[in-house]
Amino acid sequence: MPETILTRKTPSIDYSAIGILSFAHTLNDMYSNFLPALLPFLALSLGINATKAAILVSVFSVSSSFIQPFFGYFMDKQGIRWLVHIGTLWMAILLSLTGLVHHFPTLVLIVGLAGFGTAAFHPQASTMVSVISGGRKAVLLSFFVACGNIGFALSLLILPPFFAKFGLASTVYTIVPGLIVAFLLYFFAPKPDALRGAPINLIQVFHSIKAASKELLAIIFVIAVRTLAYSGLLTIFPLYFSTKTLIISWNNLMFIMLFCGALGGIIGGYLSDRYGRKGLIVTSLVLTTPLLFGFLFTSGWISTILLALAGASLLSSFSVTVVAAQEAIPNNKSLAAGITMGFSAGLGSLAVIPIGRIGDLYGLSTAIMILFCLPVVAGFIALFMKNRPPAYTK
Image (cartoon, rainbow, N blue to C red; front, side, top):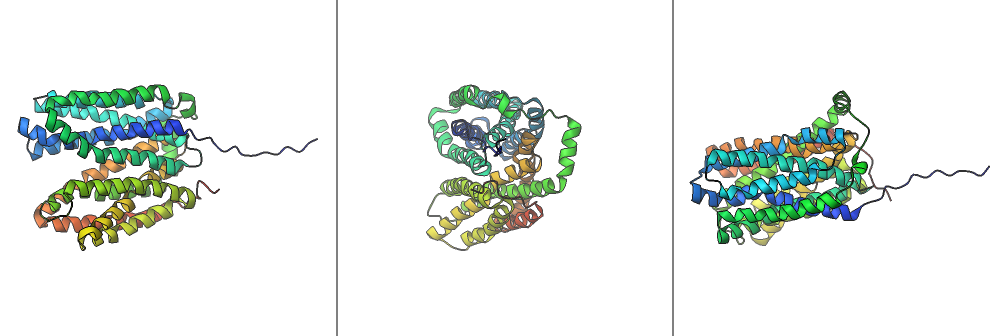
């Protein structure tokens, strides 16, 4: 009888679908940064003050973040795909109406409902990327995340000049990218059979989370502290920079930090696939703090380069933590993505409010010093994560 040789088939990688999902993520996160680009024009036309502006941004942040785990659980249970394009279209339609609304409570309602669109998109899209990425999960998910970060950064360069030239009513035309992306996702996103796992119920989910609770808690706190540092810098830096003489405008500095962060995410994903998640997360976060302090205490192009490196280091673990959570609860990938990209990040974003208060009471420099110390704190928390073997060993 001939000897039978059993070999494990390497999962194929669907690069075209990953490309479409990543392009969709770019447009999705441009919409996610829609409000900050629109607020100066709303302030002029509707007299919206800082408090009302904060309410609008907070409502969108809460609805787009904390609901993600529920969408993730629903998607894991049903094995569906339609929410990924419906969510994108939903957000595009609602945000395109914001320039036509002249009643603040109605504007708050529209913004809050729009957040559900990105809450539906992110868990499903990131799970799709994970499922079709074979042994390159972290690096390809990093590419997916980097495209979102690039879209987030580009919105500040593209949308304000557009609104300035064509007026608030021009928001209706921003529905066009959403229509295009929804069309592409409808026809080219992975089919349901590729996403459907074993049937699950709520009790199974609780058991899965309980079994990985220690690792998940470490990941959640790492993301929350990292997000607090990231969101805090995005909030405090523009105020701080406005008091300084700069060789580059503050919005260009922020673009450099975000763009390099996107590139750092791709590099971080590649390294974590090769050498493991935990080491990449700990090392990159610990390195971020001295780079940030180096930026603060230098000047000129050296300072700018250090800020770029700090952005790359800070965000190099962004997608890696998502993959780590999906590996901790492998039967609930969308839920894991919702917990990491939504709930955990939402916790960090809400914690920015006390940082802002510290800046008001004790000065912006004090708030910045605290923010600079947070990445190294997140790095030490990451030491409690499980040290899994590299995903790609060839």
